[in-house]
Image (tube, rainbow, N blue to C red; front, side, top):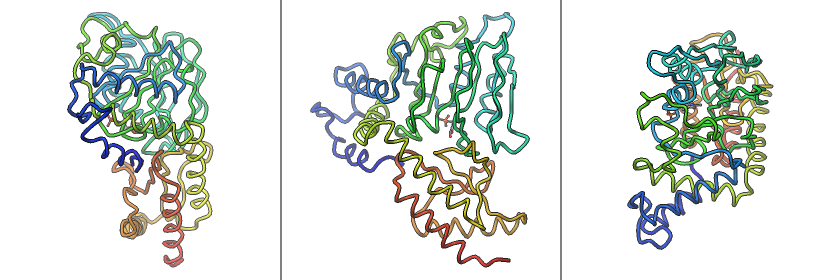
Length: 359
Ligand SMILES: Cc1ncc(COP(=O)(O)O)c(C=O)c1O
């Protein structure tokens, strides 16, 4: 979801942003009209996420998945013919696994820990980095399985890299503990089309000579994200969303609302006889609440899920099917989901349970 206020403001400004007589979609990215737009978005992001001065903010394209390649190439890529470097990855589900597969083309991947043994329903302990690790990679919030790291792993001098696509700006995060953070905009920040990379200065500039220009952090840092045409409208929309975050109390207030929304839903699931959360309590995501029907019979489970999804959709509660790779049910309650939305879901869960006979 995007906040209603943001969509209304975008509609009101569709024909004229900042008295330029232009929509943000029409602006030349090198014009004096667009520069204040991108500068405002960056400065709000820095303020809201408390990004230290020795980090650069890059607005890139290619989705979060492009970072699965850019990270190993730029941080640990070697010259043609050179020996591959090693990097540690923690496997916490689909997005971490995809990052592992992609990185394997450029570096020797060490899967330092995995929660695959229990279908990714928990976050494993993070072993200390090894001396030869060029970096240490985690997926902070696991969108599909509904788990989240609760503490930032201690990696000493080894740069810690995290995919924060599905939790950015949902609660405070100490940026200084990371070498690089990245997130696709489309969950908490705006429409799809822009990926934000927050990278510590000293990690920029190590890309090997064969790296395509469009995949080099140093070029985008030097050109202030304007090496080629950036996703101008998306960057403008991220600015509006960040205005909304600020005007509703900033990151602490956002975190407080998110914790309360998630607690409402988890409490309901924990008290339910028909539904349950498969995720270990200590590892639960604030953004993606996965749940399943509490029955060993797969056929019965499937039929009840279908019935649940149909009934929910009739009440305007949509997008509740689990990810196509794992099934089950999932409520993604990102920043813009109001408490009333979660209350409506809780009330439907209770009603559905009441109407489903015990067997
Ligand atoms: C944690 C995480 N990483 C990466 C991605 C992939 O993002 P994109 O589609 O922008 O490449 C997603 C998408 O859902 C995600 O949730």
